[in-house]
Amino acid sequence: MSPKVELMHVTKKYESLVALNDLNLTINNGEYLILLGPTGSGKTTTLKLIAGLIQPDKGGEISIDNLSVNNITTENRNIGFVFARYALFPHLDVVDNLIYSPRVKGESLDESKKSAREMLELMVLIGRGGALPKELSGGMKQRVALARTLMSGAKLLLLDEPLGALDARIRMALRKELRKIVKDLKITAIHATNDITEAFLIADRIAILREGTLIQIGTPAEVYENPQSIFVANFLSDTNFFAGKIKKVEKNSALMELDNGLRAETNKTSKAENSRIVLGIRAEDIQIYQKINMDKPNHFHGEIESSKFISGTNRYEVNLEKKERVIVKEKATREWFKEGDRVTIYFHPRETLIFDYPEEGLGKALELE
Image (cartoon, rainbow, N blue to C red; front, side, top):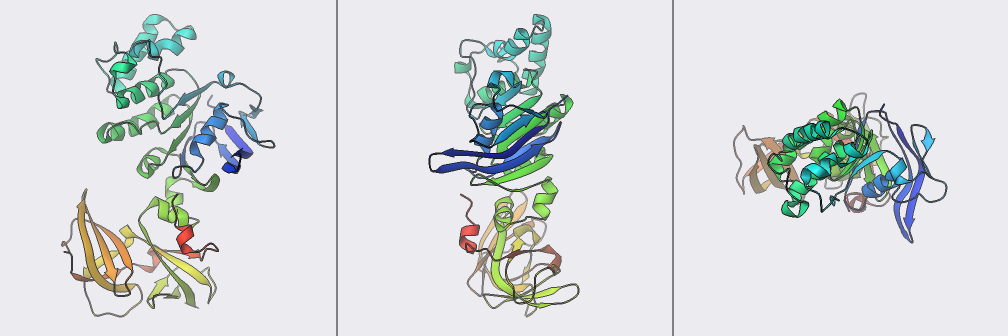
């Protein structure tokens, strides 16, 4: 049975640097959890702690299947670990790297080699079974390291940027296959990445870290639709932010007066009148039109500064009349606006994100590093 993993009040400091700060996190049996965050957020440190490669500071506890592993060595935790830097046996060819662990555990040579051939096909490595690691590209080495770990028989899999060295096409194919393999093998997987698309395609749940602190955890839909902080909204998508205050609250809507003098309406009514807020609008939730003479909430006027076509999407940067810039993304099915065109942007009240104004200031809250 795949194990449950718990981290309770886990902190890890390196002199004055706090790599992980009082982390409380539960990974359920058979769950595929993604640790997502910018570089330096604590993802790799979390994996190393679970693997036993480093120890938590005093007071923190890590358990696997309700058994504390603080004093259990790495080799006795039955964990498969795929590092961002692949660690292959340099003197063994690809097949021998793959079958090493099954053979040590007593599996027959014929059965091990059969599994290795299937794994080579899955990892798009047919014909490379006899190659030594030094004869492989970085992406090939990464795929071999991933395949070797999947063949180890471990029921807890830790992955540190496992697809980072692959080219885009192979990475896209392996994302889907990796999740399928983990589910078919009934493995608990904890996967660290800063690739948002990868996280959303693979995860059962996503744990978002920032500067060693767990900011939010939930399903992909939950963290996207209901970001609990300005940082999460900004990290997960191109979101436009405006500071302002709640001017008037009614039964099903609230009117905001933004610092730039514009007015906006939201259907989020939990904030009190006169409270200081930040309005967030995702780029993909904005509609764009030829300029219309309308002075209504949620209708902002401006001029196209930049117009780009990216993978079926029109991406615009619009300079508002108030000198602020807004990013807009639309599917490339409508008319194409050019640089210099005068436009009006609109967003529906239900597409708004409303946050308390951060104590550290909006600029600090938006920092992604």
